[in-house]
Image 1 (cartoon, one colour):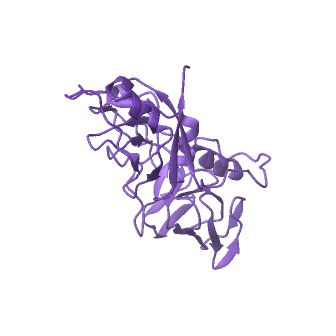
Image 2 (cartoon, helix red, strand yellow):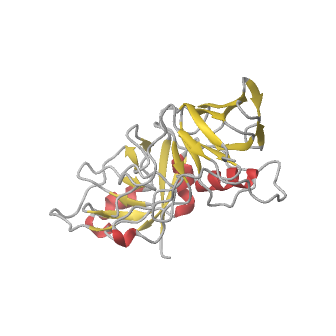
Image 3 (cartoon, helix red, strand yellow):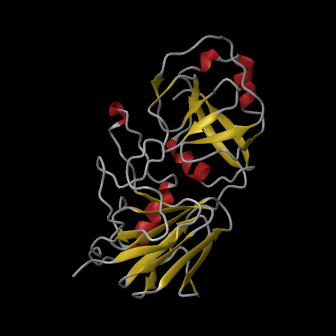
Length: 289
């Protein structure tokens, strides 16, 4: 008997399949990809009994609507939103039973940006280089969802105790990003680097899965010229010619030619994934290791 499928009735503005990403292949020029808000993905999987790295759906602002071919259990975490099954209100942040043929709808995010819909068994699209994640920069993995797509669901996991609720932080009213200076902090005026911690920035509308872009005072360089391309890591804060810091997220390129002022610790990036355009942003400089 064929396994369960989820038919995409409404894909939303941008919904992609994501797991924990392609790790250990950056030396091949392959970005990491994966869920931008890892704690929210892990929580959704935990609620339906999946392993933490099972593939789920990452929505962006506008939600998604899916029809189940067979009974499934789903959970929605990340950005808070209304959840409905065949028009009836269902729980957000808890396991939800969806009968065969029923329509499960995740509404627009009321706060934050990215929601996560996990289904027991995981989204079983074919893996590419060890991950089922969609990478919008390289094009690896499945394309963003479109109306009429059918997503295979893996076999239900072995029964295990599942929590009724997994606590998660609220989307940030102010985004605070810690910053380890280097490796190219010496390319910038020392005064400009010091002022970075007191200046006020905002999340720019051009932000996406590749990078969080900022609006605010420019960080001035102390030297001109070009920098040969160097390897880029998750959380790298690159400063292009306009002087406005760019924080690299999961779909970031593996190399870049603009100087990197510092690196944001991975633990801070889940909040960055949920910061809407216009959210106030502060950098906190970290000294030493």
